Image: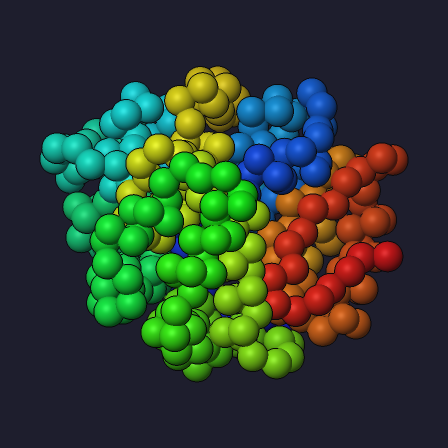
Length: 328
C-alpha cells in the first residue's frame, strides 16, 4: 500500500543523514517497557536506535527510501563494530583523524547496503552523517549565509551558557537584527527550503509563510531552551557536536543500544504497507511528521488502520512542524 507522499516526492537520495527530532522528548512521550513492540519511522536511524535503550521487545523501523535504510544499516554496523569515539569520527560529527574508507571496508554490511555505499563512497569519505540533503542545506547556511549576518564571536555568544532572561535579552538586543530577519525570509522560505533543504512536496498542506513559522520556532529554541545544551543548534552553527550530543550518540547510551541491536529491524516500506501486513499488536508508534504530508482524510484513514493493530495502552508520538494535524 502506497503512502500519499510517495506519489509526489522523490526518495532516491539521502534526505536526512541525521534525525532532527528530539529523542529525549520522544522517549518520555512513548515511555515504553520491556517486550513492547514498536513501529518507528526509520529516517537516518537515530530515534529508532534511541528507542532500543528502553529495552523493547522489537523495533520495526520503516522508510520509503532505500537510501535512508542504507544509512540505518550502516549505523547499525557502526554500533556493533566501532567504539563510541570512532562512531562519531567516522560519521563526521566530531573532529578526528581517520581513514574512513578503510574503516568502512571492514564493516559487516548486507550486500545491497554495501553496494549502495560503494556507489556513494565520497559520502563515506566526507563523513556520511553530514552528507544528507538537509545537512548540506545547513552547511550552505553556516558557511555562505550566516557570516553575512553575524560574526563567529556572536555565534559563540549565542551558544554560551546563559539564564533564560539573558537568552531573551541577547536575542532581542544582539541576534534579532534587520539582516537576520531579511535573511530568514529568503533562505528559509518555501521556495528555497523546498529546493535546497527538504522537498517542495512536503509543503503542500502548509498554509501561510514557511519562513515566519520557522522563525517563531527558532526564537523559541534560542530563548526558552538552553542553547549550550542543544545538540541540533550546535550542529547547525558549527557543523559538529561540541558540548552536547543527541540521545543516540551519547556515550552513556552507547552500550544500551549496542546490546539490543538484535531487536531492531529495518524495512523499506510505507507505514500504511507495514500496518496492513502486520499480524500482531503494536505498543508504540514513532511517526515523525508524516501526517504533515497528507490530507486530513488520509491521516484519519491511516490512524484508524493503526488503531486496529494497537495494543491496549499503546502510545502514538508525532510532530507538527508547519501543518497542524491531530489524532482523535
